Image (cartoon, rainbow, N blue to C red):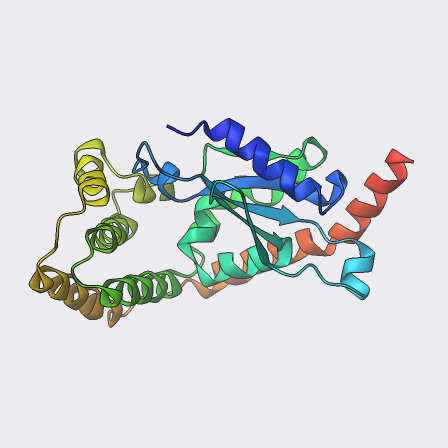
Length: 252
């Protein structure tokens, strides 16, 4: 199985070829390694978070792009505003980086990541349950309709259903419990991904129908809590120019 720590180091090296170290907040794994669904052949894919300089903010913005490594792995590079925007959209592929055990956080910003993001991760994860519901259902329906006999896509749909069931279960207290699949079910999902049996279209249609019904459910958001969290996240971003300037001065 791929050495995750080594993969993160290799991804970081690629990012450092494009950005100075003091602009890289961290490298975070997303995908099957976070779900307990990685196989022997699973790639390690990451998100690299960039703290924009004043030059980036005023003249040349950091554009979200993909670095493709020689082995086929991907590192998605983005600035921190893009990350926060997707937290607000409740995109699972972004929210999960708050809970991954596999990451490198720049020592310069460990305190910043911990205070403004990691300590608030459970609140960020339920920032907007209605968005979460529609985002997950939309993602699942789109994926399943691409190829109704594809076992890997079917496995992804089952995992997303597992997530939603746990997400709205009041007994489940952590987002990590929602994304981390229990061993028995994980074995079945891995079987689908590796052995790739042909799926009966009727099974897929039933799963699509489940998401379509759930997507129409009414979910109430705590607007006061959302506003409070918005203020905290906005304040964290407003501080960035001062933080990066201070770090630059310290390194002179």
